[in-house]
Image (cartoon, rainbow, N blue to C red; front, side):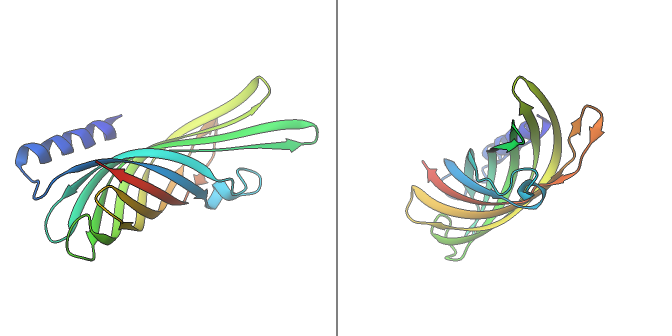
Length: 190
């Protein structure tokens, strides 16, 4: 929760300091996510596509550069049959972060942009069979890199590669899971 409060304080500071060179735009996105690394291993999610949504605020600076505080949610799930037993695996992540976007046109919110970001998030890992389940949660820093294209003042599309390493604990057993993902998002700004 401290990360989310820190993002709120940073956004408030930007508003109070008059750092808005152009108009600020809030937005939300819908995301399709392809897990990589340990999440894509055959005994875990086996490349099961995840879905998510998020909220962001585009803060234009100067010369086609923008800061973008964001909050993203992505969920993955898979049901597999082992023998005669159905196992449900679910992984959910919440990540608060800050991106720096560089627009190749030199004007924010126009055309192609490159993005780099850092964030901090929580991942919950759950395996269940019938009414029994075991779960573990962990927090970790995230890094991201991507590119996007702004089609008009409202709609843009973005591809992001994110990476984090979570270490959830299951009933005293600590596991390490690398959780990179390739995300495709449709972004709506207002």
